Image (cartoon, rainbow, N blue to C red; front, top):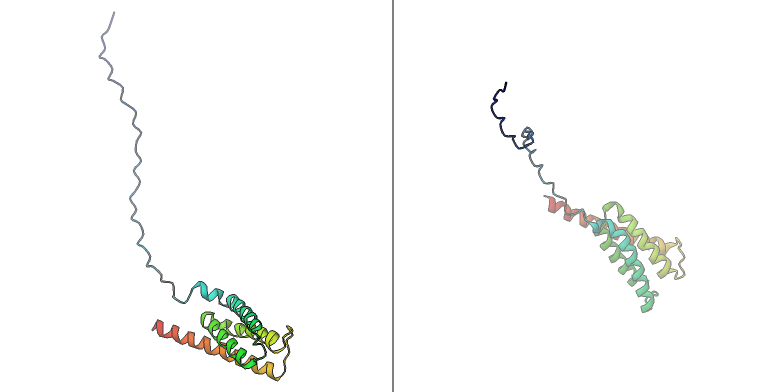
Length: 148
């Protein structure tokens, strides 16, 4: 005996189920932190560039034959020290003055790369330290005015 069955339905095409993930709201954007103006690469490179500047200044003074004129050279080194101290971190101002003093004392006063600590050497060290402190103080004052 034969039985008649109803025809089977047509096969459905394969569709993968989509996984529904819960919706998560993105976190609120954090406020943008402004980097202070005084945190620049120049502050980090001021001391090495100051040492290079002192070496170039000594070279220029030697080529010009002005190493015998100590007061003029001391003024130039004081200006260089103040300029480096303005750009450097305030903690490094004495180090900048010491580097300038070593070039001044070794190549201008003694001219044979010898360091001494006699009266003219101490005077020039004090002058260069004072120039470094003045430069760092002026830079700190300008930064304080900008912040307020």
